[in-house]
Structure formats: structure tokens, C-alpha cells
Length: 197
Image (cartoon, rainbow, N blue to C red; front, top):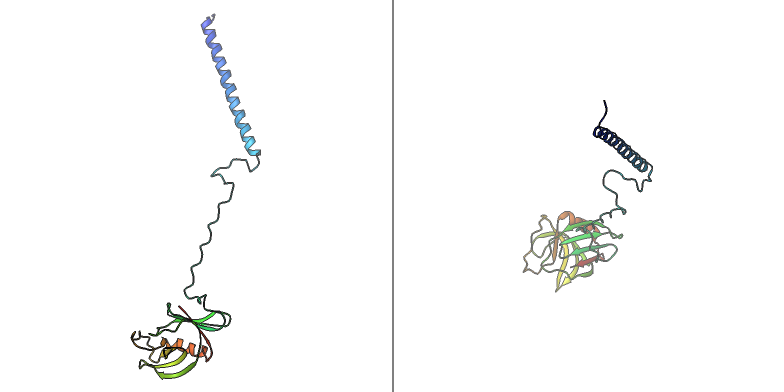
């Protein structure tokens, strides 16, 4: 049976499209193989890697936050060496050794008459006396005078630290008995007392 020209054309077209499809598949396979080979042999600096790309520069480390100031630290403007430091505003006393380290700090109840800021020296001491407010006190360490009123540290024998009458002319800076004992041992006559605002 003889083929017609149309049938021969269809057959040629089929074989041509098969050849083209085969060549296309071979080309795609060759390109894929070459791409794989190139990525496998590329140096690490240019090879693509899965995941997010690394930046050229290392991210900046967050700066360390400054530590908050220690509220119990010895006031910076209180001099050097062994001393008693009394901060009027903070109502706090520090007993500072010769290396400038606080060996004890505690709160106090200020007197109605405050000592002036500056450097003072312990002038006298009394073991037990009657306070000018009538309260029996112990371990009195005097270090200043303001308008003929003696200013000094002391502890009430009953352990109280009540607020004094603000209209009274007294100079007793009251503390707890344990703190008074420490003050008595530390602040002998001639010891430096630094008063800061």
C-alpha cells in the first residue's frame, strides 16, 4: 500500500518532533549536570548555601548597659582614708576603713540642727547620758557645734529612733543600738567625720 504525501509528511513531522524532544531533554540534563558540578566545586565564599545569607560584616554586639550606681556605696566626694561619712540628704552613715572601703553603713534619724557639710573631728565621747530630749542615750560621739548646740551620734537605750521635735534645739543624730556600738568602737576622739549634703 502506497503512502500518500500527507501521510509521509505526518510521519516526518512525528520523527522530527521526537528528535527535537530528545535533544531538548538531553540539553536540559547536560545543563543541570554542569550546574551541579559547578556548585560542588565552587569555593565556600561563592557557593550558594541554603538558609539566610551571611552578611559581609558581623553584627554589632549590643553595648553593655552601664551598671546602676550602688545606693549604698561610699559617697565619691567624701575624701579618702579612714573616716565616718554622714550624708544629710540620704540620712545614712558609713564607717570607712583606711583603704576607702565601707565596713558598715546604716540609716540614722537626723537631728533638728544639722552639722555643716565639711570635714570635722570627734571632739568628745560619753558612754551613757541623758539626751537633751530627755531620752537616756548611750555611745555619744560628738563632732561639731552649731550655735552652741553639740552635734553627735548616739543611740537611745530603748532602741527607739523616733523623729525629734523639729522645733527643738537638739543635735543628736540617732541610730540603732547595734550601729551605736559599731560607731563607739570605730570613732574615737580625733577620728575624721565627713559630712556631705
